[in-house]
Amino acid sequence: MNWNRDTLIEELGEFDWSLPEAEPGPQLKGYSQHYRLNFDESADALSHQAGKLKIADYEIALQRWMCPGAVGTAVLVHGYYDHLGLYGSLIDFCLRQKLNVVAFDLPGHGLSSGEQASITDFQEYDAVFSGLMQQVTEHMPGPLVAFGQSTGGAILVNYLLKRGFKKAQNPFADVILLAPLVRPVGWLKGAVMHPVASMFVKQMKRNHGNSSSDEDFLDFVRTQDPLQSVYLSVQWVGAMLRWIRFIEAQPALDLPVYIVQGDQDGTVDWQHNMKVLEEKFPQRELFILEDGRHHLVNESLDKRADMYAHIAGRLNSTLAPELTPAP
Image (tube, rainbow, N blue to C red; front, side, top):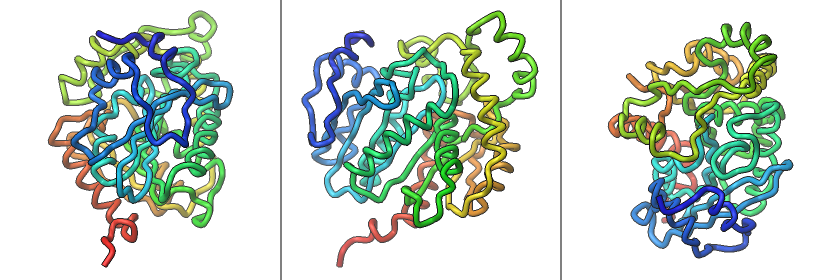
């Protein structure tokens, strides 16, 4: 491997929104090759920039892709244990829809600062995301579309419900939730065991589940991804359990969201979660991906194609004025 996490972080400078493009250093080139983040075929004259932003006491690693003739900007929020390097298929999809892309690593993930795969409170994620959104709305062209996978979906749900947005206040033209977290599978057992476990251990050995039917992806995250944590943070579990109580107590919002959920998801308690999200977002639309597991952006090619076709149809509706060619 021709790149190193610490060296790459040192190489990254402060992210400058005013720069249309920045020449990548050797470490960033190696990283981009490793995670297949070169999208030369996704859009003509594509520009790319990477850097760090100081948000809510964290150094957040951020990347931006801009395409000519863009009809808006997609903001991507990844899941627990993940980082933006694993979201190449979603970035490529967005670029092919003529959407600029802003993606970042959550605290404790990827190239961002913070204790690995841990957080003291889910509202720290909210502080980072809301801080980033202030800059995105200032510097990036709208309309904005938000995508959140799993915990990323939870962060988007939290962001909307916590602020009680009315339709006119909603910063997003659309919100796409991919296998969103509300409760995980086995959450009750975790709630019972957590108070005891937290007195004795800070972390437990991670159990890699079969989150995708793509065996190459599963092998990659298990054996070829140096940014993966091998531990489950007990602190993170406690933060999640508190967040579940908070989010399930929030009043409903009259905002449209689009949910994609696999019916073979063994990571989140999706049947319960869909009921909660229908209650919180009565206008929500739901697409059940047949035989889909949890990590939807890294599912098998046929399942991804099915999912992206439905999302493209959704965007053609929600972004219709922007996507209609001028006469």
